[in-house]
Length: 545
Image 1 (spheres, one colour):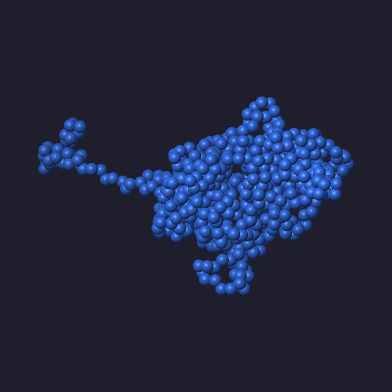
Image 2 (cartoon, rainbow, N blue to C red):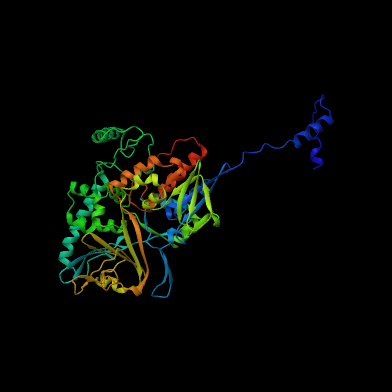
C-alpha cells in the first residue's frame, strides 16, 4: 500500500502545485471513508399454510428480496409434512416398481393454467403431456332390490387418437353407436361455438386477473360503456336495501351473473348432452356434484372450455415433491415450521405476534398471509369471518388402492385412463395411475345389500364390494371450496380488504375462476406485489386488485 500513497506523475504538472501538496492530497483522498449505502431492511412475513398458494407466496417473496429489502419468510403448517404433498403416498405397482402417487391428482391444462406453467418453467421443472383417455358410464340403481346396472355410453381417445383409443363401447350396437356419435359430434361443435363466441351474462372472467383495472370496482365488466351501465343497474338494485356510507357500501356484484344452467338453457343445449358430457367432465375436474357445477358462474366453465380447446393436459414428471423442493430451495430450514398449528394472532402496533400450539416460541412478523381454507381463516382472524361466512365448501373423499374390482362394472375393453361414472347428482372418477394402482375420487357404492332392518350396508366400508379396506393405501378427505355466487361476492370483498392491517389472503378460491391450482399461483402473485408495494411505500393505501 506504500506505493499507492505516492503521487502519480503527470505529464504536464501544474506549476502552482508542488509534489508534496500532491502527495498530501492523494493521502487525504485515500483516507476518506467511502459513502455507505443504507442498511438492508428485513421484513418478516408469516405464511400460514403450505399448499401451492402458501409455497408460491413464500417463493415469490424470497425472489423479491434485493439490496434494499430482505423478506424473511416463515411457513407454518399444523401438519407434520408440507401440505402440497401431505396426502400423497408411495406404492409398489403390479410390476414391483415403486411409485409416488400425488393425492389428489394434479394435472394442469395448457391455455388456462398459464401462471402455473410459467412458474414450473421458471423453476426448471419438467412436465409431460398426460394424453388421457376417457370412458363415460351411467349407473342405474334399483333401490328396492339393492342392485344396479352400469352402462358405458361413450369412450374418448383424446390426444392418443379418437378412434384408436376411443371408439365404440363393447356392449353398444354399431347402428346405435353411429347415431349417437353423430348427435355427440353435432352438440360438441355447437357447444364449442357458443362458448367461443358468446359471453355469459355478468361478464366475470378469470382473464381480468391478468390486467385488472384498480380505478373501478367493476373492472370485471368488459367495456367502459358496459361498466357504467352495470354500475347504475347494481346501484339501483341495491338502493332498496337501506343507505350505506361510502366506506361501508357493499354492492353484490354477483347479481346478474349467469349460472352455467341458465347459460345452457338460454342456448337450448340438449339436456342429455349436459347430463352425459358437460357436467360429468367438470364435476370430475372440480370434484363437486352436478347441482354445484350447474349453479357455478357460467363464465368459469366457458372460459375453461375456450382456453383449453385442443390444448394438452400436463403432469409433472417427478410428482409434487419436485415442485416443493424447488419452491423452498431458498428458504432456510429453520423457517419452515411443520407441526406448528397457529392458535392466534396478537396485534402489536405495526407488527403481529404469531402464537402456535404446543410451542413456547412467539413469532413477531410484519405481514401475515393466510393460505388456508376460508373456514380456518375465520377461526384465526375474526374480522374476516363476516366476509367469509357465505363461502360454501364440500368434503371430497379420495382413495388410493389396489383393488381391481373397482372397475368390475366395466367391460375390460371399455377401461381407459380416466373412468367416469355418474349416478344422479354424483360423479365418481377412477384413474388408472400405474399397473394395479388406482385413485378413486368420490367413490360410490354400486351393489348394496339391505340389512334385516332395511338399511343398506357396506356403503362406507367397501363400497358395495368394490374396494376392500385391506387394499386401501391412503384415504383422504379434502375441504373443497364451492364456486357459488356467495364466493364471487366474498372474493370481491376480500380484494378490498387485502393488506388491511398487513393481513393478506391467498388460495385456489381467491380469484374469479374455477377453484383450481391456477388460482393459487394468481393470488400468490397478487399478495406478493401488494406486500412489495407496502414495503416500499409504508404510507400506501391498502392494496387493491
